[in-house]
Structures are given as structure tokens and as C-alpha cells.
Length: 155
Image 1 (cartoon, rainbow, N blue to C red):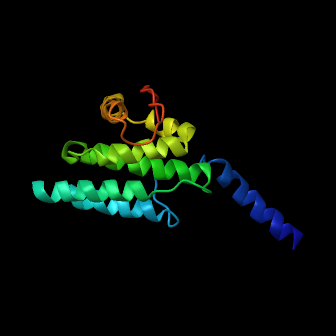
Image 2 (tube, rainbow, N blue to C red):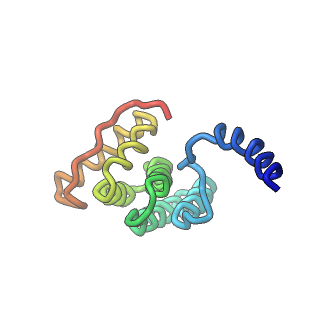
Image 3 (cartoon, one colour):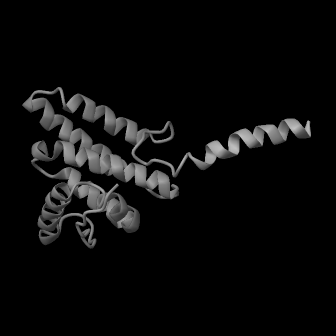
């Protein structure tokens, strides 16, 4: 029996060493919000202009419902990643910028994890998001939160 356990460990340990850190860009069964956001994005790419506006509002609604409380760092990063991905993809059709307000709420909830994920998006997208955030902050809309600093970091 002991030899059997040792054999199992000898086979599995090298595999776990190569697994690397968990990937927050992948949907997991426990991330229901990520799945819902991703489903909206899949429909968004095929929608007509009116449908895109409706789906942008749906994405914003889903982002507003994301909660980070009592979640692991990895799960928080996953939620933030899919929220940022949605904002970037619907950016041109999100005339009210509701997705950006949702991102400001996420940054208020977990600033370090938000910045970690945010700074791994293309700098062009970071700058566009921050510009919209500035407008909301100046108008007193959304949470009172420091804006993220755009910074190019390889994923």
C-alpha cells in the first residue's frame, strides 16, 4: 500500500509543479457572474446596433451586481477581469458609460486586485476607461475612489 501511495505521489507531484498559478482569465463553475457577462459578450458581437445598446446596458447591470466580498484573491481577479473585458468590448455602444461606474465600484471594493488586473489590459483601453472615470468623478457620480493609474504591464 505504501509503495502504491509513493508511486501516485511520484507521478502527480511533477505535474502539479508545472501547473503554474491559477488563471483568472478562465471561467470557472463557481463564477456565475463571469458566465453571465461572457454570455452577453457572445451575443454582443452578433447584435445589430440597437441590440448592442441593449446588451451594453445588460453588461453594465451585471457588472453592478458583481460582489467581491468574502471571495479569494483569484476569484476577485476573475470577476474584475470579466467586468473589465465587458467594459472594453461594449465601450463604443455604452453611451451612458454605466459599465465604467460599475468598474469604479469594483475598484472601491478591491483596489489592489483591480489595479493588478486593470494594468494587464492594453494601455489604450486603460486610458479610455480612466478618461470616462474622470468625467464621472468630476460630476460626483459613482463612489469616491482614486482612479487607477494606467501602466503597461505584460500579462
